[in-house]
Length: 339
Figure 1 (cartoon, rainbow, N blue to C red):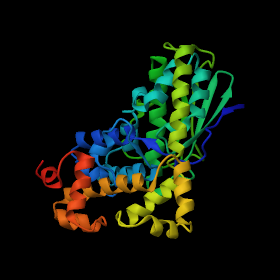
Figure 2 (figure 1 turned 180 degrees about the vertical axis):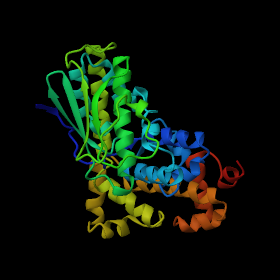
Figure 3 (figure 1 turned 90 degrees about the vertical axis):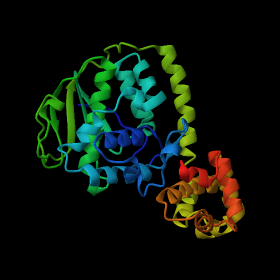
Figure 4 (figure 1 turned 30 degrees about the vertical axis):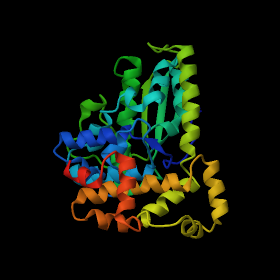
């Protein structure tokens, strides 16, 4: 058996687009759960997620996952239900590049090379033995409280997307899952009954690596890969010090100066400014982003006045907050509340 490849990332903590969270919100709403309840504690808002260039931290998606499991976890095989809603189009340019790959081999290599453009929490390793392709989902670094859900979701999403790419359902030889069998497990989902409580999460499928993909086009995939390279570079700028500053600002409710944040990170203000500049952002941009999100959350509760929100966000007076809010939303806090 030969290892075909593994992702360039070994952790699930990479930044990600909003598509996965939006999909989970729609799933929750279809089952009677409000979007606000799914987003609670994530510092995300529906309006921010609706932006075409919306990006979020992996821990924010994790907060959404935990809410979904808490609110709907009694549904049999919840992760499978959610995972089967993912489509190639959910993944944006990353998915389009996979569709455009000339062969199965090219598609797998591309997906592993740009795995940090996916929404997965499990890390796959792909092996090949003749025409059998075997993928193992490593879940050892996935938080234990949502591990079974995320293995189900990631495994079924991969199965569904591969079926979409080939324009027909793929047929698994066997499936092993490293968690107990949930009540009401849907055997029809994968076409085989899994072995539960297995040592690892493994799936095997018969596929010819050199099989052409129906929509494969070398020119198109080259254009897509150029966009994926740029996107990965921008996403990685949201890790490191930029993420640390954002996390710190969220913890203190947006009420902190650059000097205070630099001191908390054991950096000089000058060094922090330089590092943020290298990451393609600034303290002011991050502060605005955090304050906008927190302002919308605080106002939506209905428990705080505009003046109270302004003070909690570190504004000396409400008029400054109102001016900033109009710049963010194009309307006043009062009009936002009425709407």
